[in-house]
Length: 300
Ligand SMILES: Nc1ncnc2c1ncn2[C@@H]1O[C@H](COP(=O)(O)OP(=O)(O)OP(=O)(O)O)[C@@H](O)[C@H]1O
Ligand SMILES: [Mg+2]
Image (cartoon, rainbow, N blue to C red; front, side, top):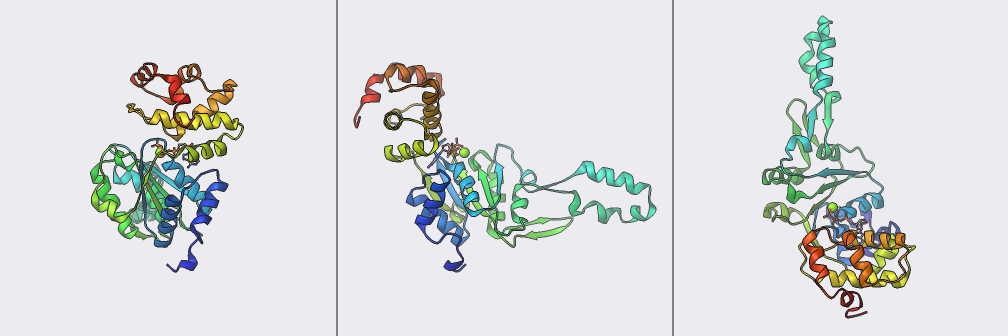
């Protein structure tokens, strides 16, 4: 594809489009997305829970003014759920009706496997998306699916075509922009990784987290916002079983706003610990720490 045909003229433009949708995209992310769109390569976003991976695909679709088609992965997800299924109920109805009519009965085999009876599941829907622009296909939490599913995906992502034996082959005229996310509960197949542009989505810096809170919870007082961002950093430095992500700092910001909290204190943190930490052991661990030091700690 010629650079001039790119929907994104520059990296700052990607950042600006994302910012206008309240998503703070740092340069590595914006660069990866621009490359993905220009080179038509899938992007693999890996990172801890709640760092903003899924949201990238949603914001990208809005920035490109195109639909987001989402495939949520889980253990046991199979190719047919991802691609297509036949609408058996409608097919049976069609057969019943054809039985009344000898002409229709003769043609039954041709008419029964018609596009009308095909249920386009996310991957096929993305491949068949008529435009005007390619769809964004989000393959969320691919690490939860089985390895066989990864192998199947690899095939689809290599030529963007899907064959439905009874009908024929569908090849994308507008190959979708593909975003894969993984929480890295297991390593993905090398072949799949090789096909993608890879980006590790890290926890944000204090400054970035302040900006995110400002964007998402604008009513929050700036000094409380700064205290939350600092405390989140301190909390993430502790090796909790499950460290809090950006999702948790936004929840916490909204919670403190709703409670009318003016200043962050050890009491407030302990009282609202369940907004930030989701494991009993982690909360117990927090209680055993010098909580006041977490809030007023280095950089306070
Ligand atoms: N850079 C950012 N700018 C603005 N909001 C952000 C940013 N990163 C994350 N968020 C917000 O944080 C929340 C969590 O993001 P998201 O659900 O995308 O995380 P995730 O990495 O997909 O998490 P999980 O692994 O749990 O699915 C969302 O509300 C999202 O809008
Ligand atoms: Mg997600």
